[in-house]
Length: 361
Ligand code: NAD
Image (cartoon, rainbow, N blue to C red; front, side, top):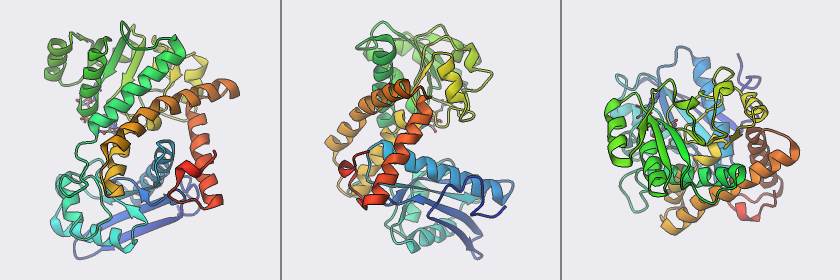
């Protein structure tokens, strides 16, 4: 399939195919939009079975980053890169330096960072060739681990959803079922526990589940049952595509609000959730805390107050989406896409690159 007529092309500004024979690097950098600022998004390393799958991933993920960055109120556009290769066997310093040179050749139009298969140390190598890289542990503006910020934004999003759906000002006394106790899920459980929620938890790693039982008084639930818990809120914090035509009819909670990326198996699952009267907090809006933290690094002068205010704003952004979805009788996921596209279109029209606060969306 060609690029321009690819189903995932979605008006991308630029797609760069990177080929370096010496190091074996084969990568695709997709710049979806720079209307709001430089296109920022991670680089994924994956052993794609064919090039079209790699292209598809790069195109979809970069558009997703445009929407995520727009909704987080950041002066950043959306982009994403994929390196075709096995992250366990195909990494080398030369390969990442070659990738860094391709990123640098875009002159700052695309800013790279870690994604699946890529570590901070890989990005440290990339940084030897380009300054257009974020998610580093060292340097003046290094932002460190994004997970606690993602977790805090998710906590704010859960508060917004329970306020809107259940009329509760806080999570005290509510039951929250958390799927996945990794970097984000664990921090989220800690915040929920401290705020007085009772926790139901599941993870394929039994050790971490036992730890949560001891530390937070959580109730352990089998992995295949956690989504269907008798809880007020379900918070998917592990895998994508967990909300689908099979799982949605079985949900008992009236709110789904968690950090996992790409929770909907397909776009129409947003409508299915609405028809089942489940309030869904769109994933890329509620889980933006981490990219907000990385954005502070990109700004060049890491400002914790700025990060905290943007992460706090996730609450209001979600309330606006919930209200508009009810007003327009649409799914929250469709409304989030609509608002994000409106922000990008307004910026492109009036040329306010880097000035989200000037946009009247
Ligand atoms: P992680 O790998 O640290 O944690 C994932 C956890 O889920 C692990 O503990 C794993 O054992 C568990 N898990 C895997 N399969 C499971 C299953 N079937 N049932 C229950 N548990 C299962 O990842 P993370 O960084 O905590 O990210 C969690 C999710 O949030 C991912 O979807 C990620 O893309 C998304 N996200 C993370 C960040 C971030 O800042 N880390 C930002 C935005 C979105």
